[in-house]
Length: 182
Image 1 (cartoon, helix red, strand yellow):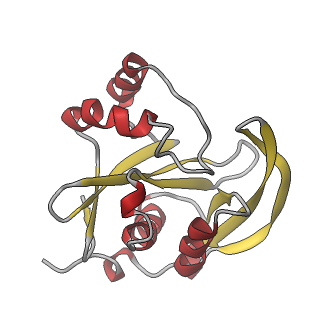
Image 2 (image 1 turned 180 degrees about the vertical axis):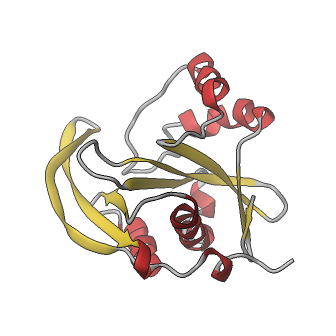
C-alpha cells in the first residue's frame, strides 16, 4: 500500500472488483478522452482472478482517499516490444472528484514506486492533445512532451492524435519523498 498525504494506492480486493465494475463501465462518467470500451462483468472478474491485475507487464492499483473511498485507479503496462519501458494510465471515476488534486498526488507517488520496483529507465503517458487536465498532471510530475503521434487512437467514431509524455528515472524523487510519515 502506498500512502500519501491525501491518497492511498493499493491493490484491488475481490470485494472492490465487483463493486467497481459499474464505475469502470459507465460511459456517462468516462470522460471525453478515455476510449469507449466495455467488457462484460464476467470478463472483468475473470481478468482479476487470473492474476489479480499485477504482473511484470501490467499492474493496476486502486486510488482511494484516506477513508478508503474509491476515487479511481492508476495502471502501468509494457509500453512496446522494441524497448524497455512502461506506460502509465490513470482515471478518476466521478467527474465531481476531478480537478481536486487526487491524481496530482497519486501519479508522482505511483511513478516513484515504479522506478523503485521495476528495472526501467523510461515511463511514458499518451495523452489526447485536448486533455488539459491530464497534461497538467504529467507536467507537474516532471513528464516532458516528446512529440505527437498523429491519428494514433480511434475513439468515438474518429481518429485522434496522442501526445507522448515521458519521464526518466533520474528525473524522479525517491519514493520516500511522496510517502506520508507514519
